[in-house]
Length: 243
Image (cartoon, rainbow, N blue to C red; front, side, top):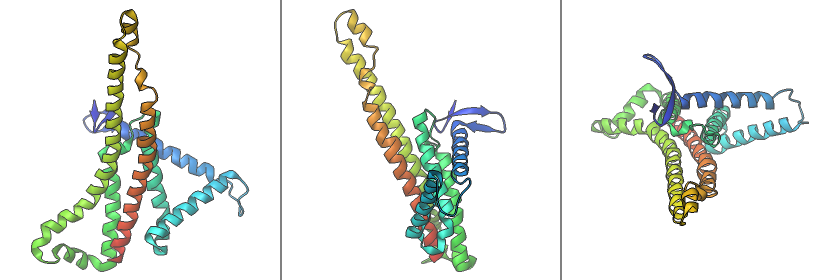
C-alpha cells in the first residue's frame, strides 16, 4: 500500500509510517553525523581538509543569507543551510533506490508551513498584531476573502512548486524507462527465429538513456529546486520583516 506515492512501512489504527518519513529521518541522521565529523577538533587556523570544508560551507551559507536577506538576518544562516541541505539530500535519495521525500507533498507542505509560521511571526513583529490583522482588510474590507486566500497560497505555492518538479521528474523517468523497454521488445522481437524471442526480453535501449535523464532530474533539477525553495524562504521572511 502507498500514500502520496510513498510505500507505507508501518500502519495501525493510530499511527502511519511511510517510506518518505523513514528516508527523511535517515537523511537528517546522515547530515547530523556529517556535521559532527566536519566540526570535530577545530583549530583557530584550519590545518585539516575537514575544517577547510566546514569553513567553506559555513561561509557559503553566510554569504547566501547576507546576499538575499542582509546582515540583519545573518543568524538565519543555519536555517537556510539546513533547508538547502535536507532538500537536496532528500531529492538525491532516489539515486539509492529510495522514494525521495520531496516527491511526497506532505513533506514539502510541512516545510512550507514552518516557513509560513516564521513569515507570520515577522509580519506581526514588524507592525504589531493590529497592523497584521488590518492588512487583511486592505484596500477595502470586502477584500478579506481574497487577502486570506493570498496569504494561504504562500505555503501552498512553495510546497507544490518543490513537490511538483520532483514528482514530475519521477513520472517522466518512469514513463521513458517503460517506453524504452517496450521499444527494446519491439525492435529485437522483430528478429526472426529463436534469436528474436530470446533477445526481445533484453531491454537494451534502457542502457544509457535513463542515466542521462537521471543526471538532469536527480542531480541538476534537485539542486535547482532546493535552491529556489530556500531562496523563496529567505525573500519572504525579509519582505515580512520590512512590513
